[in-house]
Length: 228
Image (cartoon, rainbow, N blue to C red; front, side, top):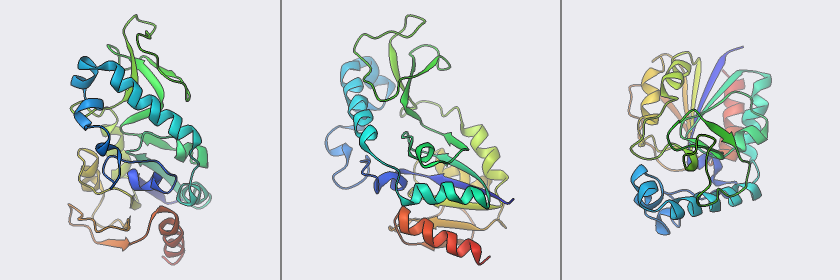
C-alpha cells in the first residue's frame, strides 16, 4: 500500500464546529493568546488557562467528526494513511483513523507541570484549580504552548520524508515548525492542498489545490487519487 501522509490543521475540524484562534469570530476575540496559551500565562494566571481549556474540552465532547474525518479513515482501506495533526481534538480518532501523531498535544489529556512525560487521560472532565499530578506538581493541560518545543517534530519529519502522497488539509502553512514539514517531502511526491482559502506553499513542490472545506475536499481528493 502507498504511504499517504496527511498534515491537518484547524480547518479540518471547523466543519465539526470547533472554533479556532484564527477564524473570524474565533477565540482570539475572546482571549488573547498570551493569556491562555503560553508558559507565561500558566505562571501568571493558571485559573484562566484552566478555564479556557476546560471550555474547549466541553465543546469537544459535543462535537462530532465531519465527513472529511470519516473519509480519511475510510482511505485506510486503500492506503497506508498517517495523519500528522496540529489539532488538539480527538476527532480523527473518533472517526476511525488509526495512525495519528498530535504535534501540539491532546485536549483530553493532562500532565505534570515539571515532567512532560507524566501524562494522564482525563477524557472530557475539567482540570480543577489546584489539582496535582502524581509527582505533586500542578496538573496542566497536555498542550504544546507558544514558546515551547514541539517534541513530536522529529517523528513527524520522518513520516513526512517517507510520504508517497502528501496531503495538507485546513492549515495556512504559516505556523512553524509544523509548516516546515513540507520541506521533508520529496519533490517528486504528489502534493494536494485542501482549503477554501488561498494558501501560499513555502516549498518548490508542484501542488494540486482543492479549494473546498474538509468534507467536500477530501471527497474530491478520493476521486482524484483513484484517477492516479
